Each structure stands twice: as C-alpha cells, then as structure tokens.
Length: 269
Image (cartoon, rainbow, N blue to C red; front, side, top):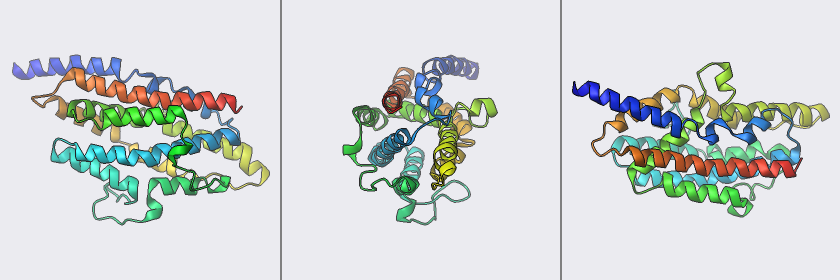
C-alpha cells in the first residue's frame, strides 16, 4: 500500500516535471539552434557564437566547482567532481569516467574550443574572456551560478536536472527527436557552414570534434538522469516545489543565453 502511494506521488510529480521543465522554451523552442541547424550562418555569426560559447565553457568551471563543494552526499559530490575534472582536462575512459585517466592542458574544454576556432584566426586570449561576453551571456552565467551552485541542495539538484535534461534531450529517441537536441543542431549547422563558407572556397573547415564529443557523451545519459531523479525523490527532505524552481530557474538563465545569440545573429545577417 505504501509503495502504491509513493508511485502515485511520483507519477504526479513526473507530470509536473514534464509540464514545468521538459516544456521549457530553452529545451523546446531554442530559436538560435533551430536557425543554426539550417547551415546558413555566415562567418561573423559563427565567430560570435563560438566566442560566447567559449565564455560559457570557461566560466562554467567555477560554477561546477561550487556544485562539488555544495554537494550533499558522496555520490553527487563524486559525479560533480568527475564533470569538473573533465572540463579542466582529464580525459574520459571507455566507461565515460575520468578515474585513473590522464590530464593534459590541451584537453581542457576551453583549450579544445580554442583549437576549434583556430581556422578562423581568432585570438585565443579573447576566447573565454569575461570581457568578450555580451550582457545576455553574463546574465546567464550569473543567474546559473546562483541556482546551480545554490546552498539549498534541493534547488541545486533541480537546476542540475534541468541542465542535464536539456543537454541530453532527444538523444536515443530516434532521428526526429535527436534533430531537436542542441548539440546535434550545432553539429549540423557547422557542417553546413564548412560546406558553404569554407570548403567551397578552399578554406580549412572548423573542426567538429568538440561538439561531436559532447553529443556522444550524452548518449544514454537521459536514462541515468531519470534514475537519479527517482533516487532524489526518495530523500526524506525532498521538496518538489524547490526542485521544480531550481530546474526552471536554470533553464530560464540558459534561455537568456540562446536568445542573446539569436538577437545578435539577426544583426549580423
């Protein structure tokens, strides 16, 4: 009987998650990535996107460090640390874990992005620099830090769920669903840019490895996120309202980032 009640409570909670988190426009209506996937971006638009994404990548590191410091159990602390060290340059093994793996500076994600931008002759000192960030990018990172690195673990866990759901959205659900995943959209868009703007005139293409790596990394992650949600829901001090608040606030921040990119790409058309 108690198990049935718990299942009914979780089913009701899951419906709230689907409504309040899964239907968030950062996941379902990313206007920049939808446009970018058409492969029609010009060089100025691609450069601006890569510059802002580099700021995101570099400044996500201290945000993730807060997630490590403020984890409430050993399992979540370990997972957060794995993400952090991978961002900083520890490669992942065949099991997608950084345990017992090698560190190299050039494997840090910001360094990988700098290498990605090399064919475009962008200043590596500028890439990832806070001064390069537009107001929407800065607002996104400041707001994300508040919620993702919150001292209230229920809000922080909700924020983590929102970000992880966004990153893995559609992967493994069939070709049509995967076409709505932002990593996939960026890969398709950069392939189109390379074909139209680089290879056609004898220029070196922009490497896709950084984006393809992250897409592959998310494969199968959606199921893990669901399992983690079930475990979190079972915690005696779990608070549905705060969890949903955390998820929505993280996605609100993320939406500011993408909408900022969408506004600038129109000006650069």
